Amino acid sequence: MSFLPRSFTVPRRVVTHQFCLRSITIHDVIKDFDAVMSSREHLWARFGAAWGWPSAAMTIEQDLIDLGWHQKEFQLRSSFNYAVMSLDEARLLGCVYIDPPAGAEMDAQVAYWIRSSELASGLEADLGAFVRQWMTEVWPFKQVAYPYNKE
Image 1 (cartoon, rainbow, N blue to C red):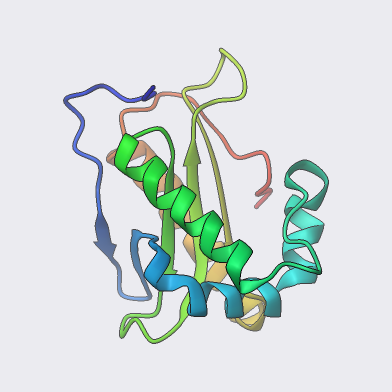
Image 2 (image 1 turned 135 degrees about the vertical axis):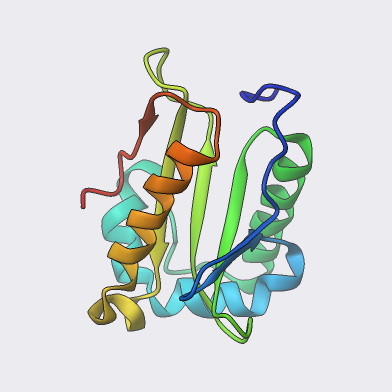
């Protein structure tokens, strides 16, 4: 079941001067696995308690299953996982998750991350500013929660 109006056209790709956001697919598994596992401590500190992710023992096969699930959720309009890609699409820099709300007082729950090697550049803060503006200007949500991102 979708938490969006049927009339809303979900963006499939958005390009900024720093990165490209696009629906993640199973074809991203090699780049995603590298980004996730090279950033595992950062991601576990942010999401581990709530999501149990990413496990230190996560395999590429498990990541492929996760990406297939995310791809299907996007098709069903039940949840949206965007890969944050470098402009040339050579590297997966992080992800953005747009999910149904955890409580009735919100319209959506959003989380995002950037790989550890990019943290010093300020890219995560830039992504956060972009996502918050994007949620306000493009998506049909009035109240969005960012429980894992505290910028």
